[in-house]
Each structure stands twice: as structure tokens, then as C-alpha cells.
Picture 1: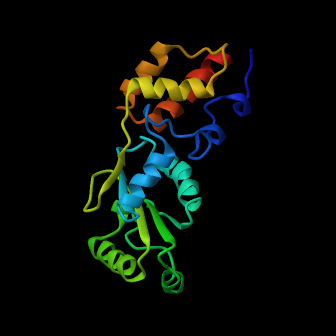
Picture 2 (picture 1 turned 180 degrees about the vertical axis):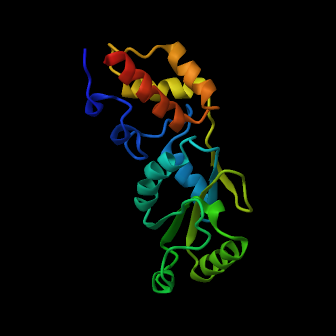
Length: 196
């Protein structure tokens, strides 16, 4: 059997953040997280290691915050970005209805974090950030990584006739040190090799 990359269930278009919903632990809902965030005066952090679903959770959580009347200002920071890539004009528009959402907050330099906190305080807006290690903000959620949750994610992607076994998932999980994003990339190759 020959398979093209467009049929591989682990292709990028199927696993990028926002494509699959974040699988919250039993008993947790997006609504309960929004209520908790509101209890933190709309200022909190999502903490977790690389590839643990922080960005995916943001993709799910932001619309739930917007449904509560917040206007999200989304900022994606990459490695090597130490300052905010937005204009002073945009910052001046922040208000108590604004929720500044920063994915990769730890990329900001210490002085830029301090400046951001001043802008947030002056405008009265909220701040929701993702980080790998906790910073000086309330923790809204920690993105746990486990083999069980990884298997649940993989199950969402596969059909019943999959050539990916539980052992394949376990091996990839161990090889990738629990980085779920890397596990999915690894399973792309396994699937491709077996379906050739």
C-alpha cells in the first residue's frame, strides 16, 4: 500500500495547535479555567515543558475568554525574541476589556517583562502567558505530560485500521522525553514507513 503525505494522520495540518482540542483532565473544563482566570483578576500563567500543549490550550481558552467579553491581543514569541513585537499605538489601546495573551513569555528580557507589567497595570488589562518554568504570576494550569494522555491524543488522530501500536507510542514517548509534539512528528515517520 502506498500513502501520500496528505493522508498521513500525523501531518502538520492535523497536529498544529488549534487543530485538536486540548484534552483537559477529567473534571476540568474550559469554563472552570476561565472562572479561575477571572478569580486571578485575569492575570495568570500556563506552565509546562516543551511540547506539552500550552499553545493548544491557549487556542481553546482564548475564545472562551472572548465569550466573557475579553478582547484578546495575541502575541507569539519565538526563541531569540526578547521584546514585544507590537507597536506603542497598539499598547495604548489596551483597556480593562483587553486580555494580552503571550505565548512564550519567558523569551522576554527581564526589563521587557517589567515594562509589560507596567503597561498591563496602567491599562487595567489582563495578562495570560505560557511559560516553561513558573514566573511571578498565579498559575492557572500546568500542562501535565503522560503516556496515557499522549495515547489519547494519538487515538484522536488515528482510524480503527491504524498501523501504529501502543508500543510505538511508548517508544516514541520515551525517545522524545515526553515532548508530545516530537512524539507526533516521530509517529509521522513510523506511519509513513509502514504504509509504503
